[in-house]
Image (tube, rainbow, N blue to C red; front, side):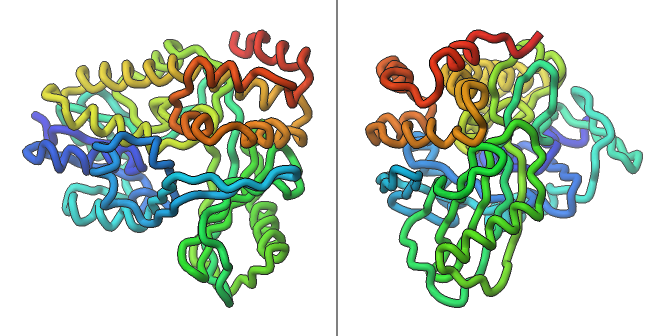
Length: 382
């Protein structure tokens, strides 16, 4: 006998959006969201560009948006540029409040999972819970079938002593010391005197120290003339940047339905996961067959479609990570941001045309040609 129609294991972004979408479209289903930590959604910030979502997707995600801007800036040693278009941010605190209101009594926190099967969840305290279907959304799963780089970051939200003067986000400020690899500072102006400042590194391994990130943020704020008063929040993370992989082998190690990073659902180059999470939530909410076998099949095919669509992005990642010195990776990104704005928009949305792809690899390359060819053709997975 099943205790629930569906159990979502891991209360991260993807499973939270699935639960909220199902609650809106199939309210008759009995749901349970299980999280190992003491609160759902952790301590994170998720952002997206307006053109990353369809009109219908944007319509239902709007109530969860915490901040919005009409453009953003990028800064490189030889390029400062402002780009238009909507940019939006959700925070874990705001989304958790919406989740608590919509799924009151259907969230179990502080409950680490020991084992999963098609129809049961065994908790570390010995309890076992049964359901007709289960979705695994416990974060990225390291596997030898994937060659991965890392986008490592430390972010802090600061109350300043005076207004900062920014009117839009700085998505990348790569004028900073590059340190281990491609480094930039990401800044979101949350209010007139509050900022999220995030020290971000594209590096080979997840070895960015917390102290280094904190020091980098402090030094950057000082360089910008911002006087930090009170630390309101801190977050850190390591996002996978896919260079190559064996998709079928990866999924053979995932016997039940998977969402979010667990299901390899993210933009291969930027690490942005919200557009994939929104699209998957829509797909699942429209299903009439909410069983483990149906959900496993759906999430597998959804992930495979995304994998095939992002082949070109993985090629670009190999050029970024393998074709030149780590501290010169910023030159690749500087060249990219000189391109026309519509192409940049389609890049973030994962909707590159054939002409876009040709444009990205044409002209004077920012990395040595021989090294670029070697990065493309060298097998990374045995």
